[in-house]
Image (cartoon, rainbow, N blue to C red; front, side, top):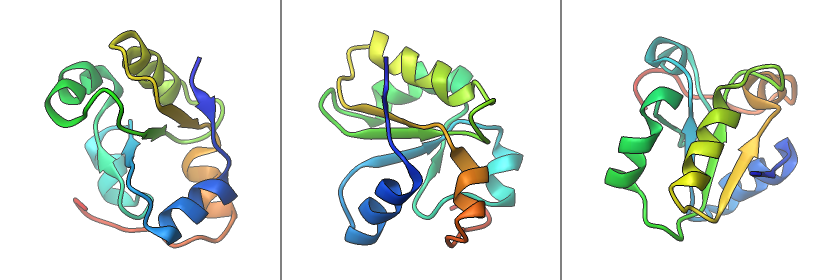
Length: 110
């Protein structure tokens, strides 16, 4: 079960420049429309291969999608944990919570 992270905690981590991987698990067009600062895009269906190529076993990884009803980040987090990643967090509030908080976003390919 991935550990939850809330919008304020995530914003603080980004602001401090903490070393972690922030992963939007949606389609590339959704990511390019706008995404959280510093996020990379790995669709949840591609997370298994991408994780092996990009992440170390002890890396901190935060996944997110649209909102708590969106299952993409939950599925991605579960796949990461099955691969043996132990430092996985899910930002269940996703893009909706980030936008509602009025925090800055990025556009394009990142």
